Image (cartoon, rainbow, N blue to C red; front, side, top):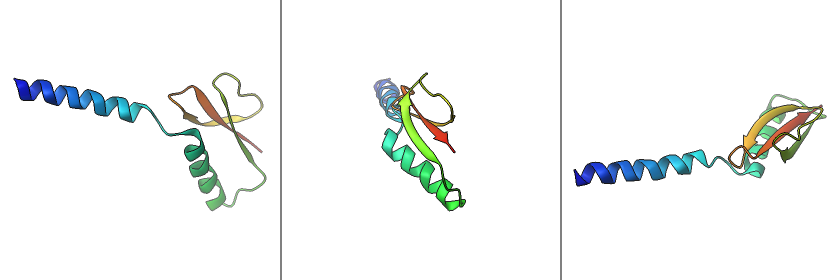
Length: 73
């Protein structure tokens, strides 16, 4: 029984670590690298608060969904 409780506790800690998401700058760099690899140029990526994305397409979420990355051409 003790092993079961320990396993549940460790799994709950691991799940909160995965739910934290990536830092915004790291995710922005990954998205930019993918766009550059496809030969896309003349774009901008902006990190804005959730709900403040105007005039662009949301291409990523970061900081537990509090911020989004917006793609503009």
